[in-house]
Length: 171
Image (tube, rainbow, N blue to C red; front, side):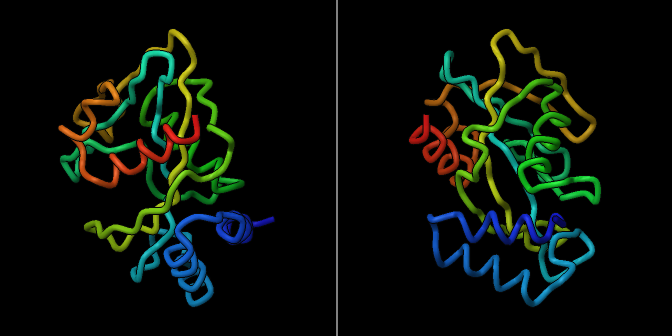
């Protein structure tokens, strides 16, 4: 199965945010290249909020280009077998934490936002960090830091806050 086909199945199985979910599906139907950065009308991206539920904290990256505290994530790659694989790859690369596992293996939220390259149709997951894990900053970040659940609203935008709320509802 192609990444495109997997993404369509994931979106069709996602029961929340029906209008936004349908907008993503319509975009993919209209744009066979809608999975890839080359699609200037927008493209699917995959992200994951790295959480440490035992210590009630999340790991955020200070994005080098956007200069905002965000969850880990980015563009899909040809080597990604599934959308979940893309989210887990991005979270692992940007956090430096091996052995992350996706919470329930299904998306937590959808978030559409404009970036310098195009509209990102982000499919957002949550990834649980193993006990004792140590983060390592990547070259895509200016900083990488753990924040308590109650600190996120002070440093991140509403999309990250909504992602944290949706994640906590699944714990």
